[in-house]
Image (cartoon, helix red, strand yellow):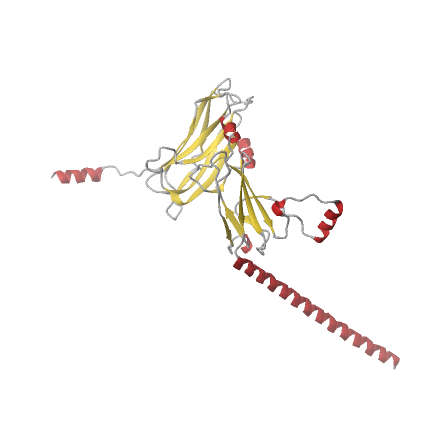
Amino acid sequence: MLKKIIIIIFLLMPFTTQASTLYMETNANEYGPGDTFAADIYVDIGEECVNTIAATIIYPSDYVNVIDFIYGESIINLWVDKPDAKKIQKANEIGTLTFIGGTPGGYCGRIPGDPGRSNLVARIIFSVPGLIVSDVERDVIKIDFDQAETKVLLNDGFGTEDELTVVGSEYKVGKTATQKTKDWKNQITNDSIKPEPFVVELRRDKDMFDNRYYIIFHTIDKQSGIDRYEVLETKNTAPDSGVTPKKSFFERFFTRILSAPTPEWKKAEMPYVLEDQDLESIIRIKAVDKAGNERFVEYVPPAELRAEAQMSLEKMLFVLLLLIGVIIIILVFIFIYRKKKRNKINKDEEI
């Protein structure tokens, strides 16, 4: 009898599934003109692993501006839409910042026994203007998520949207600055560590970039964050590291005429389409963090792919030469035919 009662109670209990929660934390509840502060975004997942987070942050840009987006310790390692300097500038014009990223293989929650915060999504650095000019008088500033545009997708292979609870942050507007030091600037100034080592992958897909070769790469910097990537494609005969040595006027003049231009470092986004589709170049990638520390990685395309590209080039040259030869033969026949025709006309006239 007791067992039956327990079963009935169990069946009548409301059965709920824990959803994901995306929330924001700041280190104080009051900021004044000239202050900078970090808003850390965390995620707590439900019963299933997630692999994609898309968030839109709303804030009053007349009272607070975004000055940096740091993701060095983020659970996200593949960014689809990452706020850079241009996007941050535009975000401050409209008071809306968007980012989208994912974790291949999925994120399944905080590591058991980890005393730290292993569920960090991103850290947004805000700044309060020294002089606030606004038509609206505010005592409290709210920084929140746009619920309609913020989503968390499950790692189920179907992109299923998880039930999501979002929790923003707010702080009081002070009359004077509350900070004596700039923790964010000190963090960058004290960063002397290079970005983490990374690998480069060479790919080519029929449905992407007109079947051209491209590379993918990614690294993190846990101190100040990655500022940019640069790529250099240089052949063995080219000057090293993209730095042009000092030359006389005549050397520079003849170099321009007789040799290829010196390769230069170019700012790159991932994926990066290679300029040298023959794969004859050594590819160098430079990751630079916000403190200016650099990590270099060199990639040499596999010999078999270089041979394949060379064969393709040779085939193209063969076809081109063959076409030129056919055109020349046709022109010769036309010339001979017209010459014979002219000679015949001249003989008829003489007769």
